Length: 391
Ligand code: APR
Ligand code: PHB
Image (cartoon, rainbow, N blue to C red; front, side):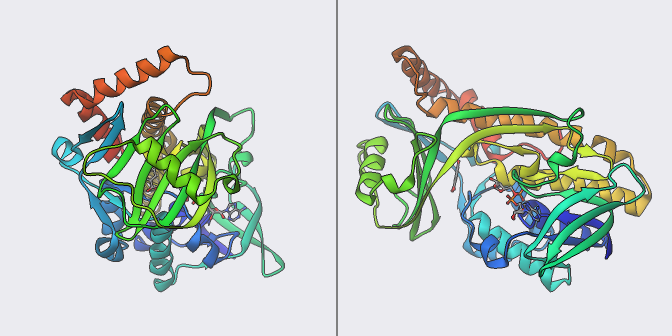
């Protein structure tokens, strides 16, 4: 089998690229190691920047999103017994959308399959080669058979644990890594959201986040040790800890209900440089991951693909390969800004295990600096709502 662009991975990155290439008449094949039900039910983050929603709209994949997403104009920072609202829309003119990543993935799969774009599920790529030669090759297994896909270019959209990043020669690759000494215990619960906006809480016991998936489903997170087993937490303990970390506030009561899912996520920042080697382009989690505090993971995957699709379209439509050279550097400027924002939000709101009383006081002072200054709020809001795709 031959195609112009071989895409490995059917997450937001791979599926958006497939759609954008198809709309420009460029052929591609998507290889995904998991089954369709698996990728459509994998629970991930759920916040889209305005720019991400605009791109989903332009590519005809936002119809259901407009019906079901919850549109938010602000967030609250909760610390030192107080609540401070950041009016994102007043400060930036833009909004954010709450819509689960698996819903985005479902919509992208439907749009691609309806247009006849081949997505092969349970097709595991095992090796890529020819990156420096005339054509690239992907070896994969599908329905028990070893297969080969040849292509002009490979999009490595295979997530953090994929095979593509390791295909870049180690002497050319630099990985920038930071592992945080804590994780998040995340729950889904049949409970209306505690508040109609997200609550980011700093407490001496650790961070807590109150978010949502629908008017009847809450998504909440609490900071826990990195190797915590979710099963160590009973439902009552989770609600009690969420209540403690939220604190007592007039007119705000914790909304509780049946917990339907719980799991622990590790927190890590990682950036791979370069993002391109010969005929291979890395995009999304295969090239970088962020701690979830800033809600940037899915949005960065989307902005990478915006830049990559432009480069591929310039090549196939105008025979202009110059954007291949600038793909990585263009993405990396935004990725590092999002890395900084995610690290900043994380360090401002979490308890470091070895924090001294000085650190705790300084952290609260930093939150006051941001929450009580229009300049501080604007800095947070501009980054939260999403920086331009190209900078
Ligand atoms: N062959 C085929 N598919 C593979 C292989 C392989 N060898 N290795 C991994 N995959 C698939 C995974 O099963 C997954 O579906 O690649 C896909 C990668 O998708 P994501 O992990 O969703 O990554 P990406 O599209 O970059 O989206 C980033 O996902 O993890 C979140 O927080 C992150 O929101 C961000 C988003
Ligand atoms: C989520 O809804 O899962 C979510 C929202 C905002 C974050 C992190 C996660 O900062």
